[in-house]
Image (cartoon, rainbow, N blue to C red; front, side, top):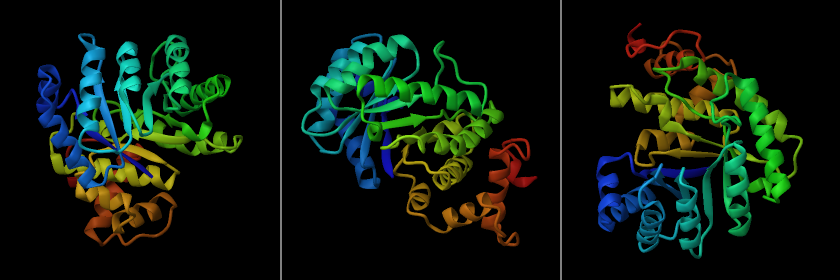
Amino acid sequence: MLIIGEKVNVMMKKIGQAMKEYDKKPIQEMALLQVEGGANWLDINLGPATKEGPERMRFVVEAVQEVTDVPLALDTMNIEAMKAGLETVRDREVMINSISSQPERIEKLMPMAVEHNAWVVGLVLNAQGNVPRDANERVEVAYNIIMAAQEYGIPLDKLLIDPIVLPIAVTQDQVHALIDSMDMLQGVFAEFDPKPGTVVGLSNVSNSVPDPELCSLLNRTLLAVLMVKGLTAAIVDPNDEALMGVVNKNEEYQIVEKIVKGEEVDESDPTVVKLLKTWRVLTEETLYAHSYLEL
């Protein structure tokens, strides 16, 4: 599985400031920290990048390339900044994160992907830029993105469909829809050879959750669930050791695998109980509350 480090991100206060001030040291330190944690790709997230987008993207890409040779995923809404980043990347694979089904982004970004032989994250926002209402709409949009990728000549084994993780504390039903869509996507992918993969921005699920330990539990339980259902890549915090344990299919992963498959688990084991309760809120079997582990 591709582990894409999430922390060279404008939303992180220290990194955002470094991007603004063109200060390479904090960016390089964060890149190296994530590689040490196990990231085999690094996401460079400039967000909207409405001001000096191309210049900032070139600066960050060059700064990261000075200290590591891992592949880079470029993440920005600014199409000119994306173009600048792709032109700056050298001697490594690169990923466009992301292209939705909006016609303007397909028309402008898919030719760039072909030109630079880039991987593509296909984000299942619909043609109006909205999150699909349910699992069925996610799959419909994903199919449209796959068709567009084929039309432009993007190899499907370089296409990763992102079915969108949203915060469970805000929209629990959307997390459930994400999980359901993973099973449906495997059926769609079976039509193609080579097959696309899947990727998620994992930590979105725990946005607005105040307890860091609960955030980690939600993140790694959802990761285990999605891995059981065929996930091939994830944008994560590679310095969360408990989460990386799940990536390596540790005991927590094995427990979640049994839960997802409906097999018996030992409900007298506190770890099992914690994971079982988390599975139930992820799938809307019980309502989410910050105190759900105590209920």
